[in-house]
Structures are given as C-alpha cells and as structure tokens.
Image (cartoon, rainbow, N blue to C red; front, side, top):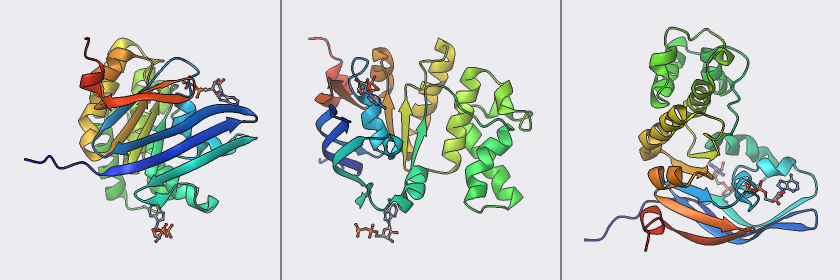
Length: 242
Ligand code: ADP
Ligand code: ADP
C-alpha cells in the first residue's frame, strides 16, 4: 500500500539571509506539510527565529536585511507585492514567546481579526469565539468572563487566548516562537495538548529549545546550527538513541 503524502503547504528553497554584512541563514531548503507539526531546534543564536520570521515576512521591518531564495505558500510567492502581506499575515499567523493579548476583553481579542475582515453578525462572532476558545482549550476557564480584560488572566491563559485569537481567523499555517518558554510546566503542557488537538487542521511550525517538547509533539524535527539546516527528519527517528 502506498501512503498518501500530505500536501506541502510551505516550500522554501536556498534561503540566505544577511543582517547587514553578517550572514545569518545559509542555503536552507525546508518544506512543511499540512496536518504536521515541525519543530525547529538548535542552540540559541543559530537562526531559528530568523528563519521563522521569513515565513510571514516579519523580517521585512528590519533595516539592512537581505533575504534571497524562494518561498511559496500554496504555490504562491510569499515575497510578492508588499500589499499582499496583509493577506499573508492572516494565512500565516504567529504566536510569540511572551503572550501579547490586546489590552481589552477576551471577546474583543478573539473577534478583533473577524471584525477587521468585515464580519459583523453577532451570532457568527459568538459562535467563532466559542469554537476558537474551545480549540485553544481555554473555553471552560473564560466562558463566564468573556468581558473581562485578557490581561487579567495568568500567562498560560493569556497564551491560550492568543492562540484562540489566531485560530479565529483560520490561518493555514501557525508559527510559534518558543511559545511556552515564559510559562510554567502545567501551562506549557496545556499549550502542547492544544497544538496536538488542532494539528489535523493546520500546518504548525514551532521553534523550541525544549527537546522533550519537540519529541513529544512534533512529527518532523529540523535541527539548525550556525545558520545552517543540519538535519531534518521524522521526529521519532531523530530522537531514537542508538
Ligand atoms: P535563534 O532563534 O536560533 O536563537 P536568531 O534567529 O534569533 O537565533 O538569531 C540568529 C543570529 O542572527 C544571531 O547571531 C543573532 O544575534 C542575529 N540576529 C537576530 N536578529 C537580528 C537583528 N534584528 N539584527 C541583527 N542581527 C540579528
Ligand atoms: P501566480 O504566481 O500563480 O501567478 P498570483 O500571485 O498571480 O499567482 O495569484 C493568482 C491568484 O491567487 C490570484 O487570484 C491571487 O489573488 C491568488 N493568490 C495569490 N497569492 C495568494 C496567497 N498567498 N493566498 C491565497 N491566494 C493567493
């Protein structure tokens, strides 16, 4: 029997990146499939965040940066016209190390992107809020407090609210840059469970320095060193001790 290969959503080829004169990424070739979690691991400063930020053009804001190579999302050039970056950011959402909810209610956080997209119907918004918060495994904790400020919750809860805010706009790809490093172990585990729970609908790429996290939740692991991709493969195989 032949196993059906999952679709490759993001493809990157021969990625080179310079901060000024300094080369931070060297010829990286890496693709990402839907319904898979890929962990990017490697020592601090090896270029994991730099590479991740290429995928939704977050790096565009940095002065004197040079990025070369090919980047496609569903076959479309990620580095097309600048005006396409608004759509790109909806398709490729990002979660950061520090939870960064907006300083207003949980409800307004989760509906923010939907309202920007022109969705005004109260019932639709309510449904999407409940669905997203459930997917992010935070619904039970906030359902009676939707109008409380998101900032009044714990760090772990705030991070799950941020994930719900992202899920509400239904991106294709979710980038996470050390999303649990600022959290306690129980909150970290809840985020990990959330990612496992939603991965059948998304393409997920997570930067982590936590090896047990990488081995627990990822399907693929990509190992970087000094701006190079040194190994990529099935997580189960890569973490096998000889
Ligand atoms: P990692 O995420 O693996 O810790 P980074 O991608 O943050 O690594 O950094 C890779 C290299 O690029 C490091 O040497 C870092 O100092 C450098 N770097 C990161 N961001 C910038 C920036 N905005 N300007 C200049 N150099 C940077
Ligand atoms: P091509 O490289 O195939 O010529 P274009 O950029 O011209 O692709 O876009 C073809 C169609 O796909 C257009 O309708 C455009 O709006 C749409 N499109 C382009 N980029 C994206 C994207 N990142 N996500 C979704 N649709 C896109």
